[in-house]
Length: 330
Image 1 (cartoon, helix red, strand yellow):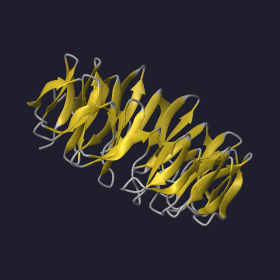
Image 2: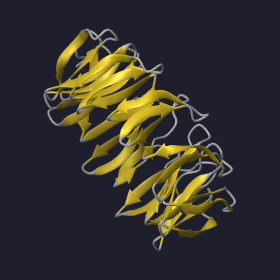
Image 3: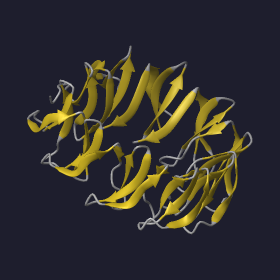
Image 4: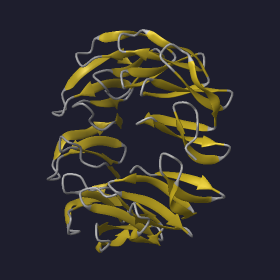
């Protein structure tokens, strides 16, 4: 049974799709369930509950992240460490910062520098970086020393030299980088694969990346071909087949052929999901279909994507959920 966190009289609880209360309103904050557990806050301290409302990680931390590779980052008094799924503190809470485990390693900050530890808390890659990301599926992490970025592997070897003034993590096997004012894409070997006089570039998503030429935005494919010619004042990544574009501070959507499917006439827009776009008009959010028809008139202070016919919204200052007919579940 899917449960939804909702707010009532400044407390959070959980209801089912029919609006029936399943877990009472007793939390100061409550998040959605993920892998059968949910983040909650009680009197300023954080923990996890199960779907029966029972604490599986008692609320004793200033912050806690969801589990990744069986470990969760926890914070007490601005120091960070890790617990396992049983709630045991398996890596001491002593770091200035800590990130999630990927590829068996996690970036931690100590004495102002980032290194990488294993599940036992052993320092595998010595702290020497000013910034450090999690490892991606390619086994590469973006790191920074001084003002320069590069990439290391899980053994700590520098595989792409720290020479970039700007760099993003690898997505779809390509990374956006820059040296000086020259922006381009590199592959996982560090080879320059796409260049074209770009002012700025975004990440690849669904095979296309937004690029700016003389402050006008379009999209390139992985061969560097300008599939959608630059014509927009701003453009975002593609998601579910559509990308947000902007003209004169108004927003709309295009498809992957470059066709405008929602004219840029809204104050803001959000992603496309389950055949609906979320749009903002005069500070309130609603939903339209691909033909521009209003499905839910703008009435929410916030509106997120639909998942299985339900979308998280904020209505009259309270977090709740709407169905596609505009009726709230609670």
